[in-house]
Image: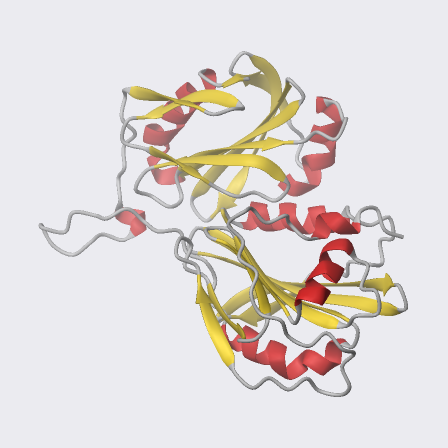
Length: 346
């Protein structure tokens, strides 16, 4: 049934601090929690309450995971519970929007050969706004893995809150109700605006004209240029080896370079596989810097024009996503197109 269960739990970096011991014995009836603590991410500002004696793994600016015990943490990571039972609360956030949510859902589905494992998305509410719920479950050893993942797209970020159990999911109902009630999704910080002339303008009023002069950016995977009044920053994308975002004052106008393992597929197969992420639109052949590539053209949201470029080089898939505020297209599109011509893989 399963392709790779290990891939369902993102690997945490050395920044992770595991704490707490908890009780990993098989639960009997509703789980009792004596006290809760709150975690707030210092970069993306998502927050959630969790049982204070649970083990935790933190990666600032990306994710936070809480386990009912260290023993069950190993069980979730390796999907070998060895008789243990317990729960997990996982918050993951990434800069982006509906597109990143769809990428994440598709990645989840592709983990399994059995299409019945991941249920169809349902529309619901969470954190005072709309959310998309995805439930998935399967047998593991002599028990069952059950998870509910809630996606929220808001304030320039995609965040999901996942509650999962190896054992009796219903035993943690009250705990998960408390967790969901406390949850606040991520928000991408907007650059300060000069307010000396009055109140700060709304994002739709900002005119952040990209500078004509460009600056070079270099990573271990690629080089590219960006407008002098923009800044590069680390981003997160599901399944990516590395992600870098280049942005100015507007939350909706930026471009992002994701480096992805192509998993042995050629570019045409990858593009065909990704059509479903872009409303089943067909991609057009184009150039990505000096590389042959493909581009999907679509709408990234209200008044947002989007492009997704794909190129394959040196054993890596490069996806360059561009979004800009459509009413100011004459400012953004030429600058972003110019940046694209400077892209060079390593």
